[in-house]
Image (cartoon, rainbow, N blue to C red):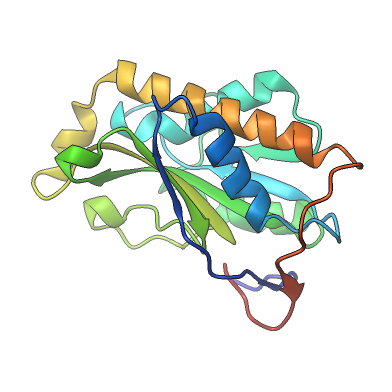
Amino acid sequence: MTHEAFFRIPKQKEIHIHHTDPLSTNSIADGMLDLLPLSLRSPIVLVCIGTDRSTGDSLGPLTGSFLQEANLTHFHVQGTLAEPIHAVNLEEKLEVIQTQFTNPFIIGIDACLGRMKNIGMIKVGAGPVKPGAGVKKELPHVGHMHMTGIVNVSGYMEFFVLQNTRLNLVMNMAKQLASAIIHADQIYADHKVSLPHKWDVSEENFL
C-alpha cells in the first residue's frame, strides 16, 4: 500500500503505565504529544482496531466509541463498536483513510496479549501496531505510532483467552485510553502550547 506522508519519528523511551495508575492520563497524553507532528498540522487519525464479537479484542472499538462521543477537536476517529475495523476489512479501511485524508498521521490502537504481571498495562510508542500478531494472523501493520493495552495472557490458546477476557478490565482500559487521548487533543488544539518539534519529514516511512 502506498502512502503520501512520510514521517521520521525519533526513537524515545516507550511509555508503559498501568491503566489504574493516577498518573496514567497525563503520562499517556505526554507520550502521544511527544510523537505528534506539531508543525505541519497533518490530520491525526486514530485507527481503533478490534471487534465487539470478542471481549478481549474490543479494546479498540470501545475506545473509538468513547472518543466519538467526546467530539474531539483535532483527532479523527476510525473504528467504533458500530463500525469496527477488524481483520476482514482492515486493508480496505486503511485505503479509505488514505483517500479521505491528506498526508494523515496515523495512530494504531489495539489490544494485545502479554505476561500475567503486565495485564492492564498501556503502551505508547513510535512505529506501527501489529494487529493479529497475538493470534498468529498476518495483517497489515498500522500507524506511525501505536497505543496498545495488554488485556490478557499470551502463549496458549489465544483465541480462547481473548474470548474469555473480563469485560470490566477492557472497559476500564478503554475509558482510561479515551481520557488520555481527549486530554492530548485539548492540549494539541491549544495554539499557545509550546512543545519541542522532535520530528521532520523524510523518505523514511512508518506505515
